[in-house]
Length: 511
Image (cartoon, rainbow, N blue to C red; front, top):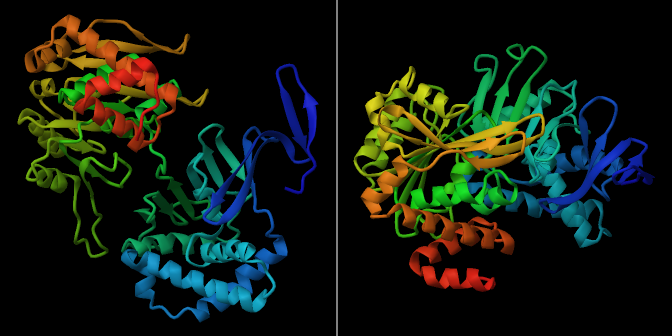
């Protein structure tokens, strides 16, 4: 990276020191075909610094690419603006631009090796069709958020390990921030301008975008991008990261297997949707799943019978809106076995959701609430305002918690719900010991499993222990992808003895 590193001994480990600051971590990734190097540095302004460099593309080369060659590329490609904005033609447009980028580069750098040409062509493409400097952090799987506050500040990112970090990337003009926000808006049929200064949208990749315009945001134009997880969380990820214990997952698995409805709650950024995604991997493959979200975030195993649906904002004339309520009503006409909802916000949505539970559908949904008691309070008070009599259709509540100080996420509670909304908390996270402890015995869920599955108390304990063994084996073997976990779970439902045999012999599963 053009920086001389030296090593300094400390009491605990070796720290590398560079002229720019103390190096906490370094790693590499690919931004499409572009190799990127990242250094996380500790400087003197209280937050880590996320610094990126692209080996082989010097400042002078960047300047040529972003000015002269970019203009040559735009004039070389003969495409209508409607083609560029049509999401169905994205691949065709990218291929056309990529081919033209190669031609432009060959004219200007005829002796350049093809491998280098591919890197420069990708860089040129990102700065022509994409979001320019924002593209690099958007390809880093270790990031959750990429944020532009204004043209005076560097871009900030939220790193999964290091939290909020300043970067060495900057959008130097307010007009450039507006141009990128307007480009995102046009691709989803929206507008952002002085009359419409607020934008909620999404990128083709599924990343959620929020943008605000000056003077609504008084320091300047902003863009906030929450990255869609390319490698969604699974139950084995959550166990490995100590977000949740095998005991809790085994109990949740037993509830999902026996079609008991669950709510996933927690504060902002606590991992509700990630946990919901992991939970859906426990659903049997022979059942029809309908998911409803504002923005596509869930990723289920590829072989499941799954129909994902998303809401749609109205167009500038106020027409064409498809709401969560519309999709919920429609989902009930599609003969679903399971309904998965991104988030409950309003009374009518909740009423239909709880009615679906009462008519025999298994429902899994998220809700903003910091603990089990607050979950009940939010459900029975405005704006949701569900009658307490309806709450008995939910078997349990899983509460997720984000500890900002230590930058960790944990399952705070698992509680079962009695008739009338009374709670029995089975598991709770002990902050002092950083462990999830069982503080009460099953009661209502045990009653439901006895009623619907014929399980005795002893059989429930045996089922949970059996599932814990399967989960621990998957964690030990490193089966963490959505399809790997889903494959083992589905085989467990189809031929339990085969899976248990592999678990007992600690053998490798053949996918």
